[in-house]
Image (tube, rainbow, N blue to C red; front, side, top):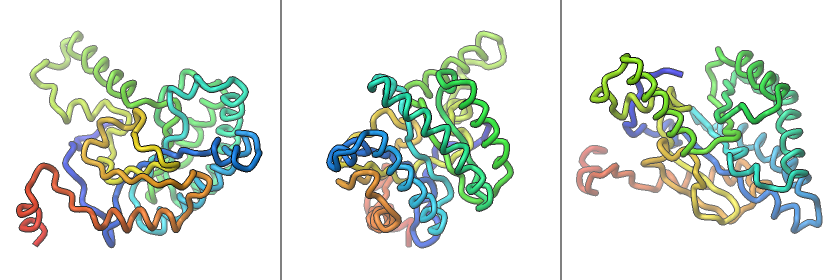
Amino acid sequence: MTSTHTSAPSAPGSAGVPRHVAIIMDGNNRWAKARGMSSVRGHRAGVEAVRAVIRRAGERGVEMLTLFAFSSENWKRPEAEVSALMELFLLALKREVRKLHEHGIRLSIIGDRSAFSRSIQNYIEQAEALTAENRGMHLVIAANYGGRWDITRATRRLAERVAAGELAPEAIDEAAVERVLSLADAPPVDLCIRTSGEQRISNFLLWQMAYAELYFTPRLWPDFDGEALDAAFDDFRGRQRRFGKTDEQVEVDGA
């Protein structure tokens, strides 16, 4: 991806809705355990929550929705759970992409794809190609993704260009770094939501969330729905985003 976009804060969309929403979907295992179910059942319930949130985000006018589906650290989970997650990911790609396309949603997958099976990689490529020209909400799924991996890969790309004589070191600025990140064409994250009561960002979109508002909810991910998303947006609308300015400066700018 290439872009001239820089990290300038993005203005909220209609009715104070954030342009770019990122969600750390946490709590599937705890949801299943509380009901005496397997972790796989929890992840399946989490897919239902994904459908509900995508639908509501589109209705509210969100420009970009980025969901943290599988981190680079999740490979450390039990082998049976990882295998089930991969099967569920492939099944979701097969079943859901056509629906996304019918609703004009563009789909992108970010992360290190090399660890996925050839079958999953093929379906990712097909899904992105099918929806590439859609002009509705941009849905991004972060799978085998880590913020440090993203920045490290970007740094390596810039270093390769410098070594090849294509780029002068002094020409490397924030815009140059952004152009080689996974979300090079994206506005910065306005609102990051994390479910299940945990209060950390877990190596997710470290560069893109520099000025994001953080919203933590005790709801487990399978219980997060359209109304819960509305509540997060209501909270966001009440925040004062200063970006380094004083309260007085923000009030003058917003007058």
